[in-house]
Structure formats: C-alpha cells, structure tokens
Image (cartoon, rainbow, N blue to C red; front, side):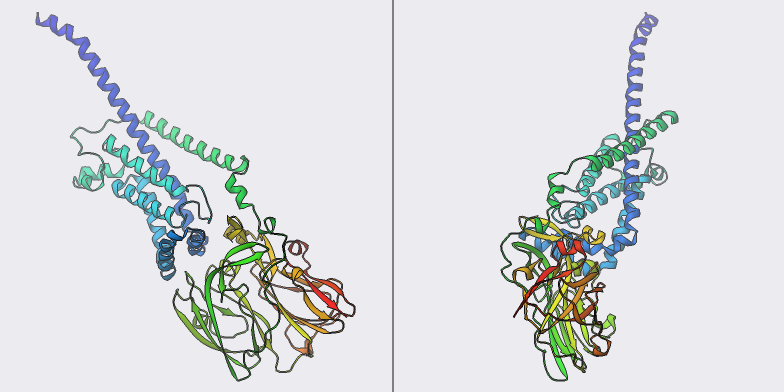
Length: 535
C-alpha cells in the first residue's frame, strides 16, 4: 500500500515544487528589476553629479538660492534668509559639499553600496534642494509653479527603500558581497529583514542581461519622449506667464514719480567728502504701473548720483542692509579691489577711501558674484568727477544711466529677475535711469541756444549703446572729460557696458528732440526720452 500512496502523492509534490520554482523565479525577476531600476536612477544621478562639477554651477550657486527666495511668501522669508546667510558666508564649502554628496549618492546607486545610507541621504538631500534652490518649485527659477524634480527624486528614493525592504538581500549589489565577508555590514546597510542562510533567488545570466537591457531601453525611451514633449507641446500657463513682459502690462498713464536726471551740486567743496551707500531690497517702478523687486543702493535704481571734484578724497561707507552678500565697485577709483571692493555679509559695514584723480562720468556697481545678476537687479549708479580744468560752462546738466531689465512675472504687475534671460541677453527693457520711457512723460528741458550737458553712463550689464539726439548734433563729445580731447561733428557715439561719456548739445531751434539709443530694438523697449527746447 505504501508504494501506491507514494505514487499518489507524487503529482501533488510535483505541483508544489513547480509552484515553488515559479515563486522563486518571480522573486528573482523582481530582484533583478529592482537592481536595474536602481542602476538606471544611478545613471541619471551620475549625469546630474557631473553637471555639478562644471564651472557654471559654482558661478551661479548663490544665484539659484537668490532666485528661489525672490518671490516667496512673507512667512517663508526667514527660512530662505537663513540659508542665504549661511551660503553666502561659506560659499566654497557649500559648493564642495553639494558636489561630493551628489557624487557619493550616484556611486551608491550604481554599485548598490551602503544602500540604506544612500537612500536616506538621497531623500534628505533632494528634499533640501527642493525647499531651497528650487524654492518649493522648480527647477532653479523664481515664480515656478511645478513641483520640481527634486521632490520626484525624494519619492524615488523612498520607493526604492520600500522595495529593498520587501524583496530582501539583493545579489546585484556590492553590499551583498561585503555582507558575506563582514556579516555586521548587513545591519548597517540593509533595509530588509535579516537574511536566511539560503541565498536569494537569482536568474540565469541570459535572463539578467535581457532585463537590464529592457530597463535601459525603457529609461532611454522615457528621456527621449520627455525631451520631445518639451519641444513640441504648446506653452503651458506657466510658460505663458513667463512670456509676460513689463511693457505688455504697462499702464498708458504717465509715470508718476520720474527719477530726477538733474546733476546735483558737488557733495562738498573741501579736500575730502563723505559718501554713505546702503544696499537694500525694495520694490521700484520700471514701467508705468509695473513694479520690480530690486536690489538697490539707497533704495533707488539707479543709486544716488554722486558729484565730486577731481583731486578730492572720497571717504566711502558701505552698509549692507540686504539679505545676502553685497559689495561696491567704483570705476572712478584706483584702489585694491580685494580691500575696497570685497563682499560683506548682511548687517556689516565697510569703509575705504580713494582719490578722484580722473575726471569724467563713471559707473559704480555691486561686484559680488554673480556680478551680472547683482547689476541687472538694480545695483548700480553714477559718479561724476568734475575736471580741475573746467569744461565750457553749461546752462543745464543732466545724468542718464542706461541699463537693462530682465524680468519674469511674479504676480500681477510685480516682476522679478530672470537669470536665464540675463545670461542669454534677452532684455525686456532697456532704460534710462531705471524706468522705460519716463522722459517722454517728463521731458528734459532747455532753451534755444543753451549748452545742454549730458553725462551718459552705460551700466549694462550686457549691451552697448549708441547715444543720439534725433534732429540734433553734438557741439562736443568728451570721451574723458578733457576739453583738449573734445570731438566735434558727432551725431551718434558708441559706449560699451561700464563706459561713461560727456556730451554737449546746443539746439538752435525750439521743438521736441528725442533722446535715444540708436539701436532700434533698444529704443523700442524703453531707451528713449525727450529733450524739450523752448524759445
């Protein structure tokens, strides 16, 4: 009878063995798939880590955080200000730490090394990036409304950790082989329960290679599809908002408060004068009814017009009341930049002196990296140095500082800076003294036959200028404020970014004479005003 019972039980045993083999093979497939996904994610992180080691990342590191902080609600400002202070005080440390952490995470994913630490560190690091550099949006732009890739990374790390816990030890990892030599390694790196003596199920190499190849193809297809979608899809509401320019939403009403272009009196008549400049964040008008969240000197853009005499000693006190590091750079000075132009932290003060040995019209600006962003956000002004041998006496004198605004819509008529536009030189406005077309509403004035002196400075930060008075001719152009070097017979004169030139005009007939940058595009987006000449 026993043989007959054994024969009857054989089909049942075979079915059980078949089911066990099927379960084992299914588990093996899941383990290989989990390893493949982890490795594919490691490839993406490796590319990301490689980009972090490029010079451009270090150059823009603080700018990422500044951009993200720009349009945050009031209750989030302390969080971003804290990180701005930390990062600006220890920028090289944070750049190196970011690079090393991301590289370590990428290697941990690729090799399956220290997986518990890798997943935990990856999720925490991605969460920190999302809540700082991405500004709870992404990627690295102010005013973003999408969730940002860093938050997606957090979810991927958490999901990977859960799979590791459910599937148990993974033979496709460095950790697995370290555990065989150092058993205590498992308690440090494994998310799964303590493994049994029986090794985890594994597929043969043909199946393994097929799975790995399939995963690579899926990842490549997903990346290609994503790139194509970004190219061909119509603009989203967010992209449409980014296309709003200040001039497209400007009011037709005249500018209420124009920046006074009148050359102020000398600061003082003595051998030395004192100048105090304060960096501060404030909201200013850049077109009729359109505001901009600017970084300024003394709360205006441009900063105060400084008027001194050749040979005077200028004693400068610079106070940083902004939310990040700032500095000041005088083109009228000859001083050691590492002493006088060094960046200082919020709440600090810097004092230095220089002798105004060279006459002319000069720009001063913030020189803290990225300098492009600091100037483009409004940190510039004019300093006029009268020559010791005076130029011909002028009846009226004006100061015009040309500059560019690169904007993104924050909300309504409030704009903020767009660093990508700054880098690619796509200005929304080119302006005189900070506001588009303001001197059409509030013309400069003169009388027939008067000598009108125009101190014109191109603060840039990117574009040149071709200064011109339509219908007029310059009586003299002083490239260096030296009367002996005056040019005559000039109707248009070029200026590079950072350059200042003095122009004299004597208009023989009454009328309204446009003052323009003869680059037609720049004239159309704000670099135009009017000189109204009366009998």
